[in-house]
Image (cartoon, rainbow over all chains, first blue to last red):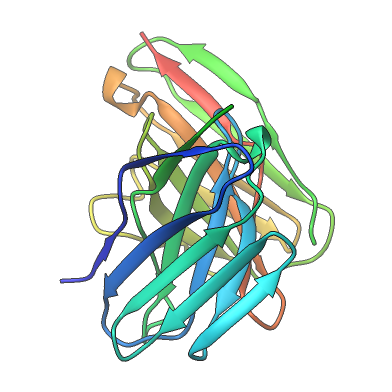
Length: 109
Length: 114
């Protein structure tokens, strides 16, 4: 079966750095996405990785290792507004998006 | 990115009735998706709606319960039929855009069935 694992919940301090991991086992691989979802709102697209390595976009970076079936989202200089759920999604060989359950990130002052 | 609107934003419905949710996009898109999200959980794909063809339903979802229309490249509807309290959820439509194929979501419809 297809599976994506993420931690259920993480807590971090304002101004710090946090890394949210995602491991996946899917039928093929055609890209990995990270989405941010604030409570009561729709998910918004954050980042996309299809090749190994690090993609940086401002305070957010996303890393991919296809051989390990592993990705992480790195958030730097955490702000209170970063409190949200972070969803990892993988596109498989059939171009279907497989969604992780999401990681709820709590930022404390 | 596309701007997507949904109507209604929320509704409270009685058991056994049906609700039609509308999704409007400000640009023409080939693929539209309908998702369900239970509180505190991730997204579950209900179906993919392409213009001019029947929607493709995921395992566990059937056309009689969730009929979908896609009359043109900017609009789609999802009907939740013969509702039960188990259908209480947030329903989201999304579109796929760009070379990466990322999805953009509407604001969602929060449905409560009593």
